[in-house]
Image (cartoon, rainbow, N blue to C red):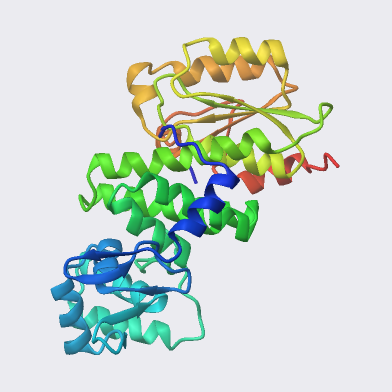
Length: 343
């Protein structure tokens, strides 16, 4: 649940309304054919858009379609293929299985069996199954992300947020999108620049939301802090927004705080909870004693609950015992433990 970065994008509702009105009917010529500048929200995609999202070439998509009867795009009167959200997810599932060593034929058979099963595909760490599918918002964000279209990414985030509300927006759009961006970067399908642009736009959008969420002055306080040398703060924005939805007041200590600054802020503000995050192992490589010191500090402040999360922190905690800081990567569990009711 701990993910990725930073950027500066400004968007307000008036500008978005003007943009939507002015660009709704804009058609541009690309690669010798007409396409809509703004991808429609009805889950339909041209083949070049499917190629952008999946990382498959147009030739491979056509080959799988014709040889394995894998997907069934509609044909427009001009002969162009139009693919559905289901088609895109099917292609991505087959691709993921092929990357795990299955032949294309085996992957197609497996995906077809799953699609006809009443049991949903569940992503479990111990299972070697493909992902459960991405919704239309995430697919469109990936399409814009591959081309580093910052404004378009921000525009789609705004639409998804307005349509779904904060809770579903975080769960169904932001987290799946960032996970898929990270996967594409790790596989070498996206460059560091493509990954960075998408992550930074999301980060800025979450900052805007946090600034506009109202919390009562008397509400309990939670501090979210990256460990020193840790640059990835997006996970904390997501966590703190989830706490804010439960009525908590929040403060974020940004990326790579100076050593000792977390302790200093905790002494001054006396929060109820401190969330520590490390998405990488860099903090522990730079300072092997960093968690020992923080664990001792937590022991001296027993009225405050300290939690540690992030893939880097979890990896480090496997071989290093903590006496006071609780290792927990799921915000719902933390909220349940505190029996939150700041109503």
